[in-house]
Length: 238
Image: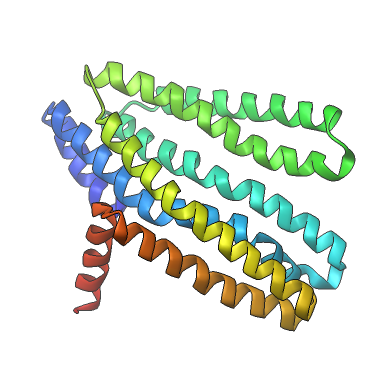
């Protein structure tokens, strides 16, 4: 999607068409959200069976701790993807300074928050907190980048529509993640956290997650989901 969108953003920027740049950024954010938001919640629901399957040889406790880290990293994908799309607008205007300063801000916040986790949280949860700091840093980075892009384009960035899409996708993803996590928990306690139990939890939990999310999103008539499904079908020739 972004590979197709970037030339359009650059062309609109070269033509000094701020409205077109805004519309392209809005479309990019809303369309990528359809994939990123459920994926992020998928890491929350499936993080532990993923890690017990891959790193089970390290011991169940160690693999479970890695699963908690993956869960914390997962939600950080949402602000990370938003910043990635927003910064494309600055590159389209041949502005590399703003993305550089934005990266410095993100790194500084991440470092400070990670240090706080190290000193404040118990040893077992300190690394999980550091993983969560990644998402916090990008949330702040998104706020800074969004504010600067609004000034650059001289107006609204279709923020209400973008926020509405993300909110509705989160509403569809939360019950999917909760039920999927419950299924994984049940399978893990029934079959154990070995290869068989972890694999079964991952497969069944993944099916539950995607099924509930898709049904909920279709019931909520999230138009971006229909657009993404149509695009995929078009690529497959169906």
